[in-house]
Image 1: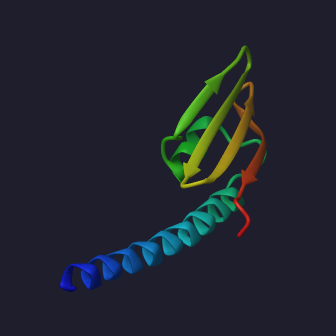
Image 2 (image 1 turned 180 degrees about the vertical axis):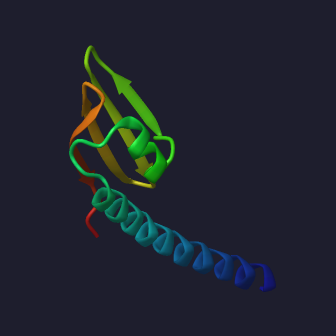
Amino acid sequence: MKKIILTLLILVLLVGCSERDEEMDVMDINEMYNKIQTGMTFDEVRSLLGEPSSVQKMETDEYWYYIKGVNMLQISFIEGKVASRTGYIKEK
């Protein structure tokens, strides 16, 4: 019986942490999105947000992805300057 109660308690705590982490991920992505402005350089973005989770390079274009849980911020660079930013946030 004690094992069942302990297991249920652990599950409740994990679910609570998971929801809280997801809320923080959404806040992080929104804050990151709001910091980025068109025309910023690679170095300016990196100094504000740190290293991206992933980078995709094409001829003169580069795409940086910041991933937090199921949420993502994509920053598009053309010739080394921010051209656009897009946030993908999971709706509850």
